[in-house]
Length: 281
Image 1 (cartoon, rainbow, N blue to C red):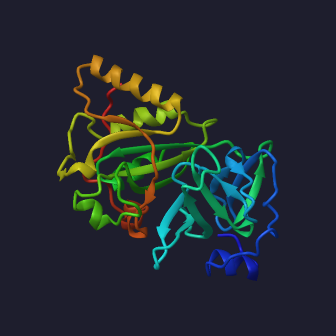
Image 2 (spheres, one colour):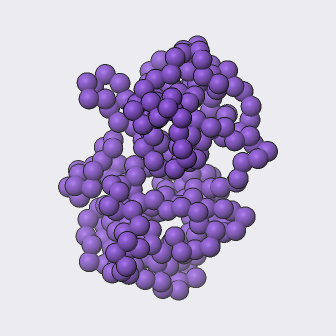
């Protein structure tokens, strides 16, 4: 984590609000990416920024899986925080009609840093569900070019789900991992091939001894190119005789799992019990 000034701590850690029309990014228009001031995680693209006239930077979309939403205790507003470190960003509002997306992320400038397009490191995000996220995270994280792997939940209808809620089979979410990688070092196709070889894509609603809809096999694509790659690899497997059950779905909000689920096998010094490499391609 980066050191914070007292004002940054007041906003990011203590959930304060900077004065309107004072933030350095309110009128900012340069091409690039806005990242978390505290941990550096990419949050918003400049192409999704617009002027809402409210006095704070406004965005009508976030980078997939980068922002966590939590309804305030009084139920009146929805707080947005960095999904990686939990730093306070501001609040999100819907139904105002400013843009076709009908969404406004109202963000404190002090919660952000800006990386110009010419300088930013190129990274991509992939999201895979293939049974218990502990094993998928552990094996994908070892691939050269992978920068970060986060276990979490996606594909359902419950906001900010807990592990217990997901296990109740009432949320619709799958256990999944969000992979941030450097495409100059590893391709999405290589990661997707590895995904299909570290779990059994023919199983339905389970993976090994783990049974339930949260353990389903599913690729959540973030770009049209990822969709095309996933569908092509599934077609290859089916041509080889595999009865692939893997779904391919557009990514929605990725909800990071509780901290005790992250880096599980590394912290325990153990190996996955229901995931192992099997060559299929």
